[in-house]
Amino acid sequence: DADVTQTPRNRITKTGKRIMLECSQTKGHDRMYWYRQDPGLGLRLIYYSFDVKDINKGEISDGYSVSRQAQAKFSLSLESAIPNQTALYFCATAHRGKTEAFFGQGTRLTVV
Amino acid sequence: KQEVTQIPAALSVPEGENLVLNCSFTDSAIYNLQWFRQDPGKGLTSLLLIQSSQREQTSGRLNASLDKSSGRSTLYIAASQPGDSATYLCAVLDSSYKLIFGSGTRLLVRP
Image (cartoon, rainbow over all chains, first blue to last red):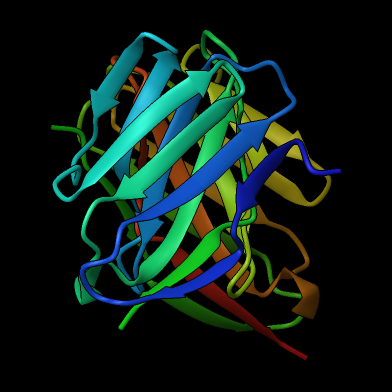
């Protein structure tokens, strides 16, 4: 089993719908991150969290919200999806301190 | 604001060549720098992590160096193979524990 699991792996949704992407990890890590990747733009940080009570905005948080339900779970929500939120979304985790980050396999989201 | 740049954006080389990928960052206040590999449509695989106090790390045919004061890192790939074809991304862990990425170098190794 993967250490960092994202669900769903693929999703097509309609404009205006609410959608939630989920990330769970078995590594016992404190830090969790959500990114989106668009062709040619690398990964851009949406939100990050250090524990269940510590949520921080990244560079592109508008239109997104997150929930850290437990140490091991970090969910990303699109309250009202729009077509330009079509992208590949990644979750990452890392232990406290200056340690290596690990990524999930990604969720390909298409908003039509 | 930390910005990470990777040059070149794309690179095509014949098999067997040694090559260097570059990563630069604007703020030297980083905790570490990590190199990743990404295959098309796939997740990121960590290749090497260099702490800010280190100058280089090696893993097999890969060697990464870090010059924090000048804001530069290089990833050296020795004796390249077609299986090395992928996008290579660097990321810095800044002083707020944000992991900031460059836009990547797309590498093609021709047989």
